[in-house]
Image 1 (cartoon, one colour):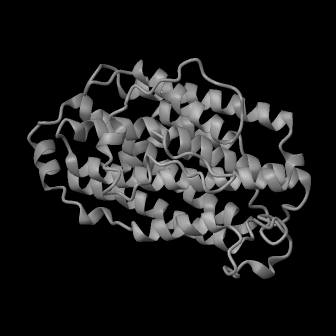
Image 2 (cartoon, rainbow, N blue to C red):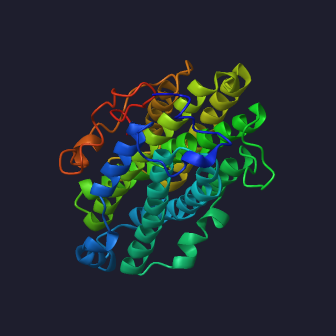
Length: 337
């Protein structure tokens, strides 16, 4: 890659629409794959889910799990989508990366539609689900943490070309792509997919499979973007910033474990809250590894190896278990769940 013509942050905006010749083909290829894998939640039948829900084939603990997971997704998908358009798209000046950012923003809105479709189908209280980020302490703690570790870079006077400005953009990308999408989403994915594994709420489970595929692509792109930004601006990746991010990942993992205890007060579906200690350590290690940081959580085993089987890799675009090795700054998709 020519780092002169492929700079991610530049005050020369002449190339924002110049897709050819390719400067970040990895981003372009992800964009094309995402478009080819387009889906709509309304294409997935919820008839059997409705029957199971209304006939009390789903236990109260399982219903709590569904509501808590949807409650977090409802708020966080909006946070990510808003940040993509108000911050990431504004400052990234490479045309191919901007194309993918727009695609991801569309997918975030699609994931919000998924929550609405599930709520409508199961006759859930929309207000209860979408207000969870305000009313449920374990969800509010995660959302508050995301907001607390990023500064507002949407201000019109923000300088994206200074060292300090680039560091703030890096913090923003690390927070939303690695902490939020790469860490906070994954316990909910495991919980909801466990339902489908027990032949419960298969329509919900299928939508989560597609969402997980999308999110795996988002994490791959975000990792590529972060590593490329650091490669082009090595002076911004200071020990202070690295230590700060390690502390953020530690806190994120801690909050996600607390969330798992809230959602799973008792063991159900072959899951219990303690399993998510190992799982979140495993996920945290994958995220740290992908951006070249040495810190590791003590446990590095995946207690949910069945996740790779539940998500039909071949049928869903082979996003999950192949390593993206072709590009120097890419992150691994193999161990993302």
